[in-house]
Length: 253
Image (tube, rainbow, N blue to C red):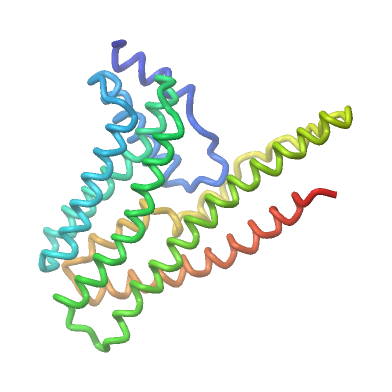
């Protein structure tokens, strides 16, 4: 194994594009993940093992939300575990690129863990509301279900947009090659927009995790969680419109 410093230098040169990434992921989560990936490389861990470490931190935190009475101490512990789990979620992909040991199995495992996280985080809030919350109305129990719907649809629709877009691009390239037509070089990638990176902050999972710091003040937590639910629903509508238009533009002919 190489040194941690060498691994860090190599990881800095193997980062994914910052396009479509919020400031939190770009300047907080990815650098934290880079440090964890370098440590995992030094320890001889595989990317899939790092994914499972991410799952352990995340799922333990969510179990605590559902089973332990809310308090400031719980909120701090839950936030810390979720933030560490999210950083390890970044580290697994960075380690895979560093070692060349990534593959479809690792990508599948990463998505399975992410999907479970999105389902469980809102289920845990629902259980906490039901067990410990002195709710103004039982209608508050519907809020985590609506938030869960928005989160899961955004996640699944984004994955489908990516996969269907790749399939359409591959088909277009094959058609161009078969007809001996020159391949369309496309347009150069647009520069990373700082305004977009700021605008995406409310939709970033790392920013969402901050709301758990309010667990010691149930009313403040409910208000913050409700605001984030509305914001994520608005982002869902915007993303679905954008992705549909992009896929429609990829129709043959």
